[in-house]
Structures are given as C-alpha cells and as structure tokens.
Length: 437
Image 1 (cartoon, rainbow, N blue to C red):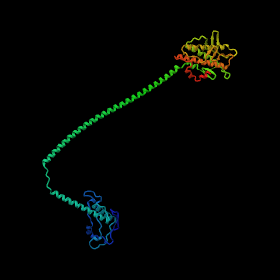
Image 2: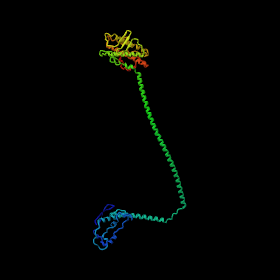
Image 3: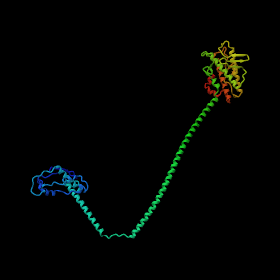
Image 4: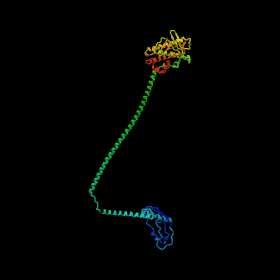
C-alpha cells in the first residue's frame, strides 16, 4: 500500500498512513471467509441515515465502501500465495469513510495525531465523569421523589380557586368592556377633534386668503392714494407756478447783454464797438411800446402824456403836436421826430409808474431810475448829437424802469403789494446791480 498523507484536524500536523513491509501478504481466496468476518465494521446510522431514507451512495457501492483492509497478520492458516493488490483509490475512499464515521461517532474531527488523540481522550474522560456525576445526582433526586408521599389536592380548595379565577375572569372581561367603551369614546372624540381641526384649518385658510386679498386691495388703494397725492401735489405746484407766472414776463423778458438792455432777447441801443443793426433796435422799441401799452390797458390806466401806437418794428408815439416815428435808421444830425417819440414814451412810462403807486402798489413803490423830462437817471434819452454809449445807457435804464412796472402790474393782478425793489425781481435778476451800471 502506498503511503497516504493526512493532516491532524486539531494541530494540523502531517500524518503518514502506510502498510508495513514486514507484514505477511493478504489471505488467499480460501481464507476470505474467516478474514472477512473480522474485517467488517458496524457503521453508524448517521452515516447513511435512518431506514427508509434515500442513501447518498448507490446500494451497489455500500459493501465496497464498508470494509477495511486489515493487515495480513490477522488471517489464520498457512500463508497463501500473494493476492492481487487493492486499488489505491478504493483504499483511500474506505479510509476516508472510516475517518468520517469516527468523527461522527466521537464528535471530534479525524484524523488526529497521537498527542491530540491523548488530549481528546482526556477531554472525553472528563466529560464522562461529569455526566456520571450528573447521573448520580439525578438518581438521588429520583429516589427522593419516589419515596415522598403523594400530594392529594383538596377539592374544596380547588373549587374555591376555580371560582375565584372565574370571578377574576369576569372582572377582567368587565374591565375590558369598559376599556373598549372608553377607547370607542376616545376614538369618537378624536374623530370629532380631527373634524373640528379640519374645519379650523379650512377657516384659517379662508381667512388668510381673505387677508391676502385685503392686503392686496389695501396696497392697491395706498398706491392709488399715493399716486393721486403725487398728482395733486404736482398739480398744485404747477398751479402755483402758473399763478405766479405771467405771460408778459415770458413774452417780454427784460434783461441785459453787456452794455445793452434787452427785451425779448432784442438789444436796444448801439455802440461804436458793437453797432447793433437798426432792424433789431426797431424791433426792441416795438416790443417796449407794445408792453407798456398792454400794461396800461390791463391795469385800466388812461395815459394822457401821449398815445402809444405799437406797430411791430415800426412803432409810433402820438401827442398833441402829431405822430412821431420811433424807428430808424435816423441821423444824429437831424432826428427830431425820433427824439420826440422817445421822450413821449418816457413820459408815458413815468405817468404809468405814478398811476401804479397811486393805485396801491405800496407807498414806497418808485422807479429805480427817476425819470425827469428826457432824462432817465443822469442820462438823456435823445439820440441827436448824443454819444452812442450814453444813449445806450439811457435806454438800458429805461428798460429797468419798464421791468419794475411790469413786476408791479403782475403783483397787483395777483393781489400782492410791490416795494421799491421787489425781492422777486432781485431773485430773477441776480445781477441787478450790474443792470444799474
């Protein structure tokens, strides 16, 4: 037999299993009955299962797998001629079955080495001793039980206990019924509370929807109110501006440009350094005549010094001696009609200023440049034989007086009194002192 190597299932030491060369050969065919009788081993039912169950191995192989090849020394009789050797795989399979059977019978995995087998043997001996001690204790207890007198219960006590148990059962059932009724009432109350909570939630949702709608309407109302207030404020401001405004101030804005006084943007006067075209001078005189005529008619004043005839760029002034032309070009050497027209306009301006003061402009109302005959301030308004610079300055002073008359007329029309130097005029003309110069 070829050597077979196994591992100890406890310490994993290699175990070599082989047949001894000194052993005699296997028994011959005539000795098989005696040797076979001693070579079979009884296998546990756990190996193949109880009867009636299907075996994992076919029946034809059970006999082949159930024998163990014994050494030839166990055979009786004279030695026989050598028999054929058993195949190695059959021997290995039989040895494996034996090891599995031993493992199942002892509860210890086989194969094991000598040292491990001794340890297992000692452990099994200890377990056997424990079992024997337990068995002895059980036998003693059994003896005591067998020797004790029998326990005979009292029927009356049993009936009383049974009745008490019945009463306890009835009481338990009653309490159970009460608990079930209370649970049903609680469930009904919970259902009612849930319904009330659902109604409250719906009411809250409706409230918030209504609240949001109200907030939206309120926001829209506030926005509309603010818009109306803004429009009202803007309208009030525009109305105030319109009330304070006067078309005459816009149509006949009197200001200055360098040495020239201007009315409606037209320069009135001429200088050697800047000879203004006569067409512009004529248009400026036409605007001045038209403005004074409108102011007198608007205020209801009747001017007796002269009669103003505004005719665009060809204005005229009429008096008792005739009608005088107030437009050029004219010659410095011979322009009596032109000078008479200028002096007549100056007389009408003075008369209108006196009328304003008499009609309530205020006791202190006066022209910034006094008018005396043909002079405005210290400058003569006559053009004949005059220097252009002085004539231009006189015309500038005349326009300043005309502007004050315009302001006074607007103030009277709005129901306000006007002093000698109205602050509004000062604000509108920040360079008022320059206009004086």
